[in-house]
Amino acid sequence: MKFDDLEVEKAYKVLAPRPAIIVTTENSEGAVNAAPFSFTMPVSTKPPMVAFASAPSHHTCKNIEKTGEFVVNMPSEAILEKLWITGEKFPYGVNEIEKAGLTQLESLKVAPPRIGECFAHIECKVHSIQEMGDHKLVVGEVVHADVSSEALKDDLLDAENVKPILHLGGVSFIVGDHLKRVE
Ligand SMILES: Cc1cc2nc3c(=O)[nH]c(=O)nc-3n(C[C@H](O)[C@H](O)[C@H](O)COP(=O)(O)O)c2cc1C
Image (cartoon, rainbow, N blue to C red; front, top):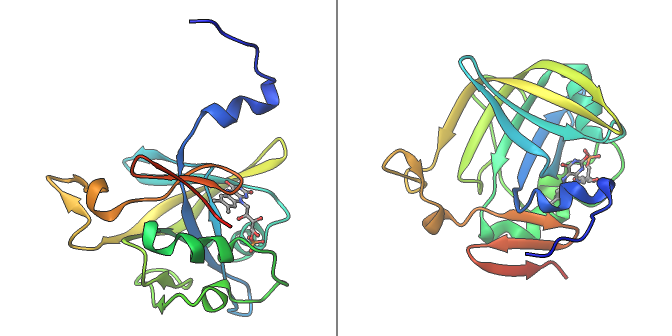
């Protein structure tokens, strides 16, 4: 194999495709927010913890800093276009779940809602928020989780069935073994 140097600022582009999630939050007045993220990973199993990195200016990050709660919603191929709408810039306080035509379900242990069309939901209370260069690393302790009955097979995600959305970058996604671009 022949290798070319890669600008270090672009190294994250080969750490891909990454699972796309939609994070739901509320502000102090109870206004709902939703936005997609792909800088995300599990970080502990006992206690269960997950993390994602957000630009500090994002409403998601500001809401979590204020309220300490969020939900990680797992989208599948069927809602790729709607996920994209949740990523558009709306004024603070606008509910992107409504803008995208998605369904809001009450969560069991936290105030921010779940998204009905997503195949799994991970309800979190903030463990820590740490500055990480131009992002903030948000770590949440999982206080409740649920999954659609068709999404698990032999205790693993049935990815062939639920078709999770993987983000390559920008408008490009991988679903199954297909490249998809959002128009
Ligand atoms: C698929 C996808 C993945 C994204 N991943 C991230 C991410 O990991 N971190 C981040 O800060 N922004 C990410 N963004 C950008 C934010 O979702 C976008 O700026 C959004 O408007 C932020 O919304 P908010 O201000 O309501 O939180 C991503 C966008 C898309 C479409």
